[in-house]
Length: 222
Image (cartoon, rainbow, N blue to C red; front, side):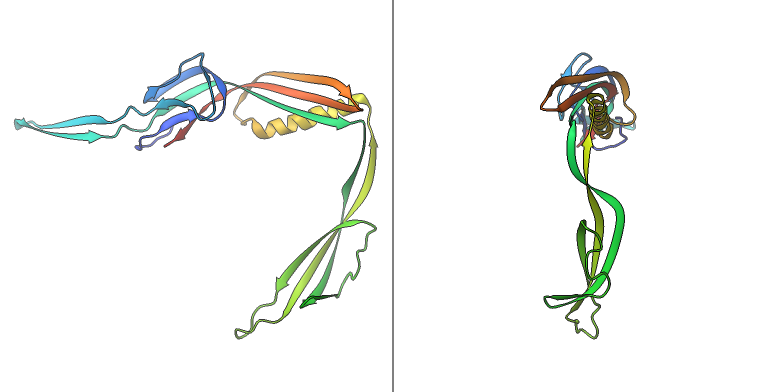
């Protein structure tokens, strides 16, 4: 994208893509419409050093010469970019999930011994435990050999899921689209989408989502 700067810099490709439009505000274009560019490739470069002359109108015979750096490259290089994400979902699956229930236990730790004051035991049949230690504040440069302990219990449960082929494909497509949302810039224009389904294997459904966008390819680098 265009950038206001007096430092000599260049515009490079933020990602691999096909160039559809080059607009140079300042600098020298290195690519043209129809080129395929790779990530990191220079798109528009600064013009290089320029020689500047200053002439005193009262004495035309005196002229001062100095070398001036070219200002930073400015412009836009827009084009098409392709993204893809593939996900697999099993028709039958066993996993562990959090129920949302949380219990907290407090205790003290003296050297290697922990004494729980509340929730001495895990209150759930199965849970994830996280222990956080807090050192007591020092008093007159003397540190107490005691730590405050906080134990967080998050209840979990085992889940078994059976899916139809259609349900598995829908879930795999939704997961692929969610991944693509994190990759595609919000300002990018979606040109085309393809959903490809691979042949099922071992009760696993494979879905690949492909997206073609039109977006700004250039980013500024010194």
